[in-house]
Length: 284
Image (tube, rainbow, N blue to C red):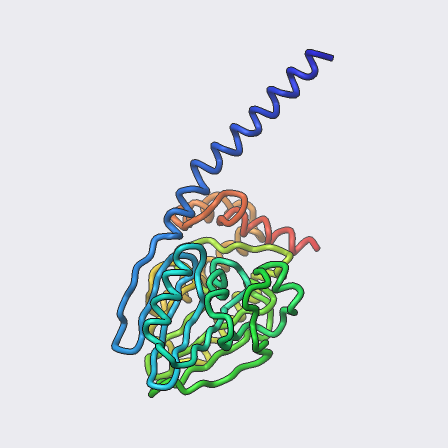
């Protein structure tokens, strides 16, 4: 019995060491990079805050301030202070591109303001996932248009699941700029989970929809650097390549190596995890 206990103890220690090693090698560096913040004054009215969770935008007018995604942890507090300094007594409208906490963690700092999120969630799901602090006040099922100073803003809830069951994109017409949330990433692997009804075909449909509906010159991805329309085209190629590897396993190794430089956490959000998710979804 004593020998069994010793063996069991050794196994537990090895598992702890493995988990700690995995966290130290993969998760900690990824989170550290994710928390890095870069503030870009795009023009007089528009500020882009890259990193610190999901990428954010702050659009200021004489009558209101629009905030796209509220980040997480310390970056969320920092963003809220910046927004409130810019807003003064003006009303603030927050758009959450989706439910995940790296995009909604700062909602609590905007309690009492208008918060817009996709209408295919319900309040119970949102509260369980993102917390009860400052949930959305408007659940958008389709689309809406806001006039923010001289900018016309379209807020579109995608008509099908992609990253989650209710993803929102935001388009600034005069600037020809699209905020894609996590439906559009730049050189980073997606996080696909059944709980959120993630669907690779939904991503591909979303790429086609936004390119058809909007005249896009600039893309602010959910994570990664700001770029042009090539950000969407590159991400479309990523999904098509992964689907090609699912259809022909002989291509798998080469395709996964092609995207080895993508930001990733093995087994959770990586080219390989994307491939397994699509493959398992096809089996179902």
